[in-house]
Length: 110
Length: 119
Image 1 (spheres, helix red, strand yellow):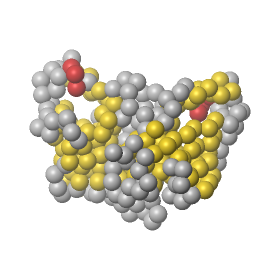
Image 2 (cartoon, chains in turn green, yellow; image 1 turned 90 degrees about the horizontal axis):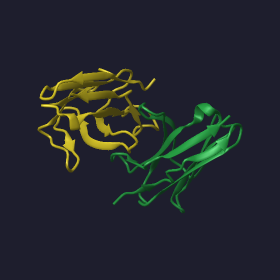
Image 3 (tube, chains in turn cyan, orange; image 1 turned 180 degrees about the vertical axis):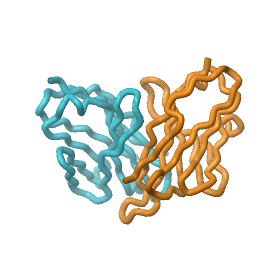
Image 4 (tube, one colour; image 1 turned 90 degrees about the vertical axis):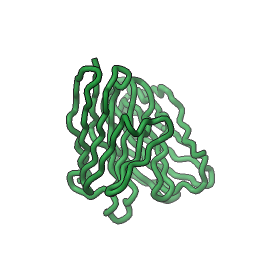
């Protein structure tokens, strides 16, 4: 059974700090990895996707993938209060449906 | 790009009525769309996978006769909640898989969601 695990949090960081969100997955065949952000009462919004081992940077966000260890992480630099949300990790095998983690709540305090 | 719309955004109905929710991919074609349900403070729950031109695939425990899905074109899928009851009140969210962009052929984009309240 495909599983995606995330710490539910909340992860609390001060404004300006680096927030580190982690995700592990059980299926070694997973090929695509996604991070979504979901504000309370809203639908998920795609932040980043990553396919290859290593780092991928987009603005203040960096996704890191380590397939050997089966984890993917999301770093948010210079965290802002507006980054406070639940972050969902999702993995995909080929064209299968996405398997979502339960999400990590991030709280950025001013 | 990669915009998915849903209509209506909010609906309130009486128990026993049927409600139709539309999901459209506005700037890409989506062979596959997905319907999720989310209760307050809970995780997304996949209800069904909607494939253009064929029958939807429902997740275990989801009644296909209650949640009717039609995916008649590459940009439109509809979910009809038939004979809705208060326990069907939830946040319904669709997503569409972009099957045309190089290197991103399995990315899912979510619609804004429909909040259903059944009185």
